[in-house]
Every structure is written in C-alpha cells, then in structure tokens.
Length: 459
Image 1 (tube, one colour):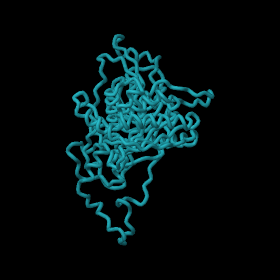
Image 2 (cartoon, helix red, strand yellow):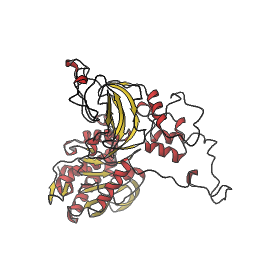
Image 3 (cartoon, helix red, strand yellow):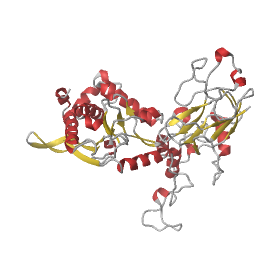
Image 4 (cartoon, helix red, strand yellow):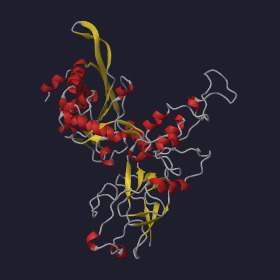
C-alpha cells in the first residue's frame, strides 16, 4: 500500500527544514531506518531515517527546497495492506507488522535515536548515481547548458554533492562545481575544495576584468566579475543566527570591557608543551589556555555563568560550564559547546577543542552540541583581529573574544622591549553582571593567560 512520509518535528522546536540531499531515488528498495535524506535545520545537518521498509514511489521535494514540518517529502509502496496513510509508521498496521518474523520485528525511529536492528548495524547506503539523477530530474532547468566534459570521478548524470552555502560560495567565486572533486565525506564538495579550485586557470567564459578606472564597452567592472546583484534566500543557519543575534542584542543590555596583556610566558609554555610527548596528539593554542582560564574564572565569578529566566522572574546560577566555542563553518556561524568543561583536565580540554573544531568543519555537529551553552569564547585572533564587541549567545551571561597574539613594544622590568601581546574583549549581560564582577572575571582570565603559573594560586 502507499505510505506518505511527512517531514517530522526533529525535536528542536523548529518549523521547517531544507532538503540538502537525497540518498535514495524513485524505484529504490529501502529498509526500515535506512538513511534516505540529509536535511538542514536552523542548527545542524541531520540524517533522516526511513520510517518504512518498501519501494520509493515519489520524492515530493528537490534538494534545496525548504519544507515545513508536516508536509509530504517522500512516498513509499509498503508490502501488505491495512493501516492508514498518515505519514508516520502506524502501530495498527497489522499486515506491515506481520511482514517480518516476530523475532525480527523492528520499530522506526526519528532523528537522533537508535534503532534495534537485527544486525546491530545501520543498513548500508546505496550508490548515489541513480539517486542524484532522480533528484536532478526534479530540479529546475538551468539557464545555461551544462558543461560537456564530466570528471571521471563522478557519473555524468550526477549533480555535484555540496551544501547550499558552498554552492553559493562557488557561484560567487566563479568556480564550476562540475570541475571540482570533493574531499569531504562521501565525496562532498567543501568550501576548502572550492578555494583550492580557485587556483586553477580561469575559464574562457569568465575572462579577467579590465583594470580599475577603465571603462569597458560592456559597462563598469563589478567586484570579482560577479553579477551586479546576487540574492540569496534567508533560511537555515543564516536565518536562525540572524534572529538569535537580534533577540540577544535587543533583549540583554550588553556591556563590553577590554584588557590588553603580555602573554609571552603563556606562549613559551605552549612551546614547551608542544614538545612534550604527552601532548603530541592534541593541538595547543592560546585558545586552549583561554578555555581553561575561563573555567577557573567562572568558579570565582559565577554570575558570568548564570541565566536570566524572565518567565519565572529568577536568576539561575549554573554550577557547570558548557563552554561554547564560536566556529566559522561553510554553513555559517556555529557555537557548539563542550559539556561540563569544568570537569576536564588541561589535556582532555585540548582534545575536546580539537574534536569540536574538526566536527564543525566537516559539518557533522549534532544538534545536541548546539544546545545548553552557558558561556562562550570567540577566537577572532585567527583572522588577525585585535579586539571587538562580541554579541552574547542567547541565554548566556558572557562571551569572551580572544584577539591575535602579536609582537609589539611593551614595558617589561623597567625597559621597553618586544613582547607577545593580546587583547581580551568581554561582553556581558548587565542585568546579571555588575561592572565589578565583569572586571574581576576579566582580570582573572588575564592573570592566568599572562602567567599560567598563577593558576596554582586560584585552584
């Protein structure tokens, strides 16, 4: 019988999701809980398992479509009769229940929950060639003819695998994704792949623009030779981030303080630790020291680790630290957090930071990792920036911006010498944190980073 599967509530209180890619095509036979699609919510890309065992009869939406929760996305021809076509596995479907032996009976699961399968393993994915061809058949006809040549790494009918932000980035950069080989999971084309492809010779169809100041016959030169205007739908991660920043900026009264410190001893300590065999498998940076310093300083100034509950008219002090780390990813800004960071020793914290960064870069951050943060750090120093005014992550009382470490003249032991210097920028919710508490917190973090040996006196 025909079963229509509707987009489920993914458990995040979100009302819509974007179809990133289909893992199946019309005519494919799928098993219960086999991954059939990747969908992008406002927080993460998640895999969608099949709620039925059967044959795919229709894909209602093409990759890139934004679908509201409860709308149909895929139809199945399920063996047996009875039951109702309600878009979800029906417990009253007796025929479907008897299609498998009682000992092998299984139940469908939603995103984020495991399934009790016979083998204990997730069913293997099918090859993408036919799936992508089917998805491509539903997509709008392109305005320009497709390239004649197709890389040997990909079947001719297959659309290059990438996320919507990467496709936009490639369009803006003038990179033809048909000529790019993906290095991500299952051949996914990443932002780094597009950047690497920019070093290739320019296509004859996109000649270099004239020198600035000249007046070409076709009109003034545009930035990067791109169209004069590019419109991008506001959806997914960008939509969620924008709304969160507006809510934070106009709900919590922000105050920001700055502290510039000499971190030469910290940089010397990091060099010694990098040479230590015990730390060879983890990446040690100023962010590692800053993360540990924040955990210690929050114990001394707990108001920076609290939450304003307007509904209950209460201030909730949190005696654990879910440390958020702002990460720039191909999908936009994410702030995944390290759960119970206060309980990790220095080496474990360094490993957690490494894993968090790698997972975010690969686009595999789980929705759970994006919830429940209590305090955040944003490392703007990696972009060569000294300081700024960071906006609070919604629901948190503080965020620390870590500036670049650079050599500059500094007063040291009565002389002006070159030292390694950085600037810390702390924004806090002035409803929760007074200026004294914010200043003491920033001073504690600065003291540890300026001389890590001082943390012994703070423990």
